[in-house]
Amino acid sequence: MGELSISLSSEKKDNFTPYFIGDYLLTQPMTSNKSGFSKWGFCTRGGKEYFIKEFLNPVYPLESIKLEPDVRQRKMDQCIEWFNQKKRIYFSIAASQAGNLVPPLELFRNESHFYLVTDKVSETPMDTHELSSIDMDNKFIMMKVLANSFSKLADNNVVHADLKLDNLMIKQTNGCFFTIKVIDFDASYLQDSAPVGEEIQGDFVYLAPETFLAMIEEPAVLSPKVDVFAMGIVFHQLLCGELPGFDSEYDYVYEAVLNDAELKISEDIPEEFRSLIAEMLRKEPADRYSMRQVLSALKGIEASKRARGSVEAVHASPAPRAELGGRWISTDDFD
Amino acid sequence: MWICTKCETFNEETSLVCCVCGNRRENTDAKCDTTVLESNFKSSMEDADPNSSKKHDHVRMTKPDRETYKIKEGQDSADIPKELRKDTPAVSEEAPAPSQPPQPEQLQKPQVQNGDISLMPEPQPFSDNFENPFGAKAPAAAVPVQPQEAPAAAGKKSSGLLPLFIIGAMVAVAAIAAVIILLNQ
Image: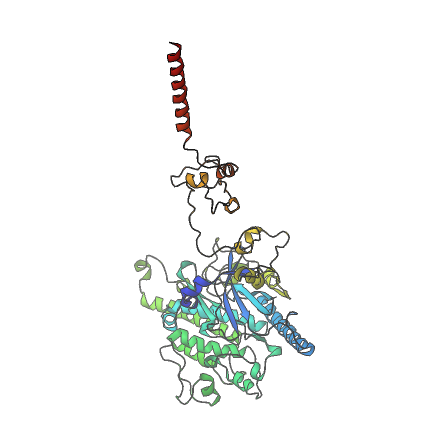
């Protein structure tokens, strides 16, 4: 989003006069860039910066607008239903916070529109290529951060439903490490109230096979496994900078998977991660790893790396104490 | 709870290393209280503030009808656009012409058109805000204007023969005195 804000023309900024939305002072014009059903921008309150989103739908029927009573009532009911649904999801997301979700802080109505406010993340913008060129230790931490965050969401039956690189913000932390912040819960739902048909949102590039089946109203169970499938694709991109390969007759990963076509996981990816991604991209949700299993698998890979590293260190250094200044390579050296 | 400085994951108070990245806890690690996270989320279906936002912006950004605009009680007059203040004339967008100091002859010799006193311009008093081109503030009473003198001067004709009359009178007195002296001799 850093890039998006830069792309706003200076002319627009010059002509923009900050104004209040509720208690928040909008400091830049809102944009609908990369945002399907909303506009977003940045605002301040009490000297702190926030991200603000204006939902284009539903629109609250103000008293000042002339409407037939039944139309007004229908619009009002729609708003109340939407609002209560969002409120329920947002409370569950807030309860899932493990440090790297960017949860909603406030949902409110101002005049005819609804607004969502979250913290503003100090992002380090990166494209896929730059992301894949981060060193392996840092990538590994980012993958564990993701698995941990989504495990907490899954524990609370929250399905993000729009996991993709665009909704992951890379943040540089103290000591030049990178972590990942998860944003945009617009498409999210609770497992017990999963949407059907046209209500379903998502990006086709990261779409799980069962989500597509639900879209065309065929029998399908939507669960946090939807996010596991998307995360498998994200891991592939993170590790080699590309999407998994599939036959050119398909446009998307889910199409190939639904047709039992072979997925080609890049050989540039270390073997232990390739097998993990294969487990995450399984067609049947029941056969697919859960988020907890993904997190466990990552910890298992880390443990085996440490063990292997220790063994390699032993084999590679017949007289280590003298050469390494009396210091063994410990498991902490992988941190 | 504490936040790992490396990956920003929340960790249990009892753990000494981060559960995600294995980073050792440092004394500088920020503490966090996750118990307030849930209650931090606020939601409201009520209008946030119907008197602010776009309505306020509307007042500020557009030019309301001058005839219908009314100053609300307690409203700061500084917030009211100049063109809407009823005690001042409408302000043009163009910069006002710099004020020029009036010339003394303009003030002392009001022009009478067609001899009609009613057409004379009203005399303008000086303002304290007047600044002369030399930078010194002109005193308010620097050039007193006495409009009441103008009508008195306006009704009289010019008296240019008076000195001749006086001189003539003096010459006549002197001549008479000379004649009287000669007759006495």
